[in-house]
Image 1 (cartoon, rainbow, N blue to C red):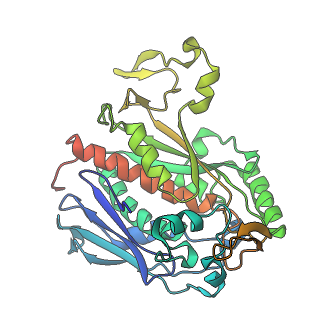
Image 2 (image 1 turned 60 degrees about the vertical axis):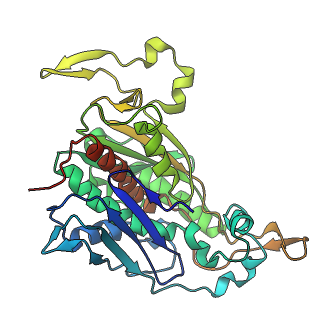
Image 3 (image 1 turned 90 degrees about the vertical axis):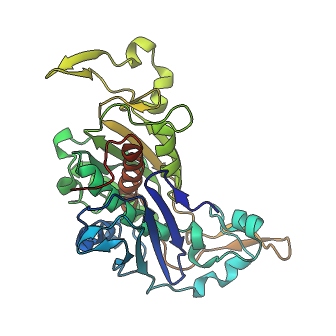
Amino acid sequence: MSNSIGTQFVVTSFGESHGRCVGVVIDGCPAGLPIGLDEIQAEVDRRKPQSSAGGTGRREEDRVEALSGIFNGRSTGAPICLLAWNKDADSSAYSEIISRPRPGHADYTAFLKYGKYNDFRGGGRFSGRITAGFVMAGAIAGKLLAQRGIAIIAHTVQIGDVKSDPHPSHITRRYIDKTPVRCADPAAAKKMMAAIQAVQKDADSIGGTVEALALNVPGGLGEPVFDTLEGELSKAFFAIPAARGVEFGAGFGAAAMRGSQHNDLFSVKNKKIVTLTNHAGGISGGLSNGMPIIARVAFKPTASIGKSQQTVNLKTGKKVDLAVKGRHDSCIVPRAVPVVEAMMSLVLCDFALRAGYIGRIIS
């Protein structure tokens, strides 16, 4: 496996869904950054499931512990190790999937790659559980970016066929967190909740889309041609379990536009060059262009569902039916919002360090 991301701000993820703990090691964090565990904890708490929004019945405390790299409330420049212990894992429901891979999950592909040796309990390394560590690292990356005035915020824009149309002034952390589905459009949020409740009653699941915005990003971040900004962001987003699609700005809609429609015309505002539209999503030629970065990540429905589905017994080679037991999210989209924020923060922080936009010592 490849468990690290980043060049200057390097994050290594460890742990499994039903192992002892999940966490990250962060190498490359500048020294002197004020870090309070309560700030990291607040971000991790946003990732916790809410039953009213289709969240799993698994209730982990997720109390963040720092093992190294922080002294007297500041980063030391040494590797930072953060973790949370798994205390509410129940592996009893997973004995039958050893030989019966769940449709839509990574059970079969993991079997092909690792044989019988991977930890299959709760999905192991392929579980959304590991994203708790992503959020821990993202909290620190976000603090570094905030030192330079860069802000990142994500919100739910679609669940099933319900789409939101929020007023721009409502796309704030305070407003988004008012609803369990983390949607900035209250009317759409109610319909999203109803859609989730409908699939819950049917022992099914539902997917959706999260939009992320990065504000006040300086122009020129990115390293073409292979380490483009949108390329590295996409890599980070696709590391989130269940992510199935990524687009920037107009995204796939650009395929139906003319150049005269898609081109973002330049203008001057307050002595700064800006564009009149943002179909490029803040990225041109693999580099940030100074406009807000806009990305959307599509998530598939949770693979583990209570409906009976056909699979194959790997021992006998015969078709069998499987109804997945255990505790699973009917919709992971609301919980994915802080994870998407975290992954965007990691990538932008890494590029900011590579460009020298963030120094090696925070004074």
